Length: 384
Length: 123
Image (cartoon, rainbow over all chains, first blue to last red; front, side, top):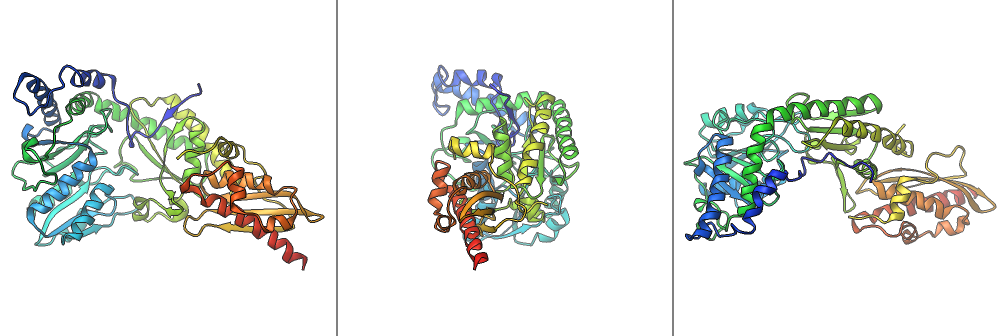
């Protein structure tokens, strides 16, 4: 078997063995419905509440401010639509580079009569807090800005933005799916009222996530049914998944700081190695305000997907920054918002490193990239 | 989305990639929506394409289809190449996924354009 290197941790991560071990009993002996009052239900409830405590402790918020959901997309939908619909109408401020879960929730709310301002970003993908300040109107009912961008890794100034929203008394939602458990975030100091987080980006299982909802935040239910999760989210909880999320958070709390440093050094080795070997390369996103494991690299005059396929044939998993889907050119909307010229945007490849990434992996990728790009450029009519 | 072993093989080892000096004909095919581009060069002797070279900018399947298309075209009469159908190219890579059908369109168009260029130059 040839070497396999996974550099797509922003897409998903393998479940940590300790997380699996913690989850297993909840598929079998502790299978009960946590809403049931008998012993079987109580056992499941116990697992659920331990997980809630772990997440709350990690975020330094109240246990009853955590609501579990089925994934980051549901968390964003619940936070954005729930907060907006509770007000009945009004204006929302967001950015052009949010995840589709936020962008399309905002678009759906526009169809319901809400007004939305989509703020631009600068060339490093940063939202300007002054733009947020200027965009807030008397009828603004929500500001929703992501913490870290999944494509380029830029970390937004949410603390500065939170200061503004608090001043103006506007609820503030932060989509932290890509940063939760990777870099610290002080929910209180940042004035955050709603925060989406997920499990499978931090070595927990898929199909489980959550939202922090600050006590007193007005919310409308998005999903109707039973009275689960303090009536914030109807539906029997995914107990094994939630238990796994709780364990994953506990593990991240322990290793997050050291791991961030290690991964950052590897990422910088990767980008420096590629830049030293391959001409006409640029790294997209902010130079320092960036997720430690994320490197979005553009190879000019080469098409993203052909590099991804070339690397895949070498056992390396990365993702295409831009893709031609169903015959349509689709430069990434994030790179487009950053103003990256098309000949750079079309050749963007995202490498995202994680727990399992080693120096040998990084060196293997550097060695693999150079001949692939050279070959593609040699056969390209647009490259000189 | 899965690719055939033939397609992967062509992508991994593209045949006839690169420019040709002083070709007898040149043709291009482009997908306006997707931006993929293929350019084919022909060397023609006694009405046959004896040497075929290509350059492509595009996703993996377009590169593979161009490589397979260049093999398909080599040795064929130019008159045949004028009528080359996209399905001939798709067959040469053992099929394309629905989202990547354009690869065969771009390559067939480029080869036909090169054949037309040869005919034009002869007039």
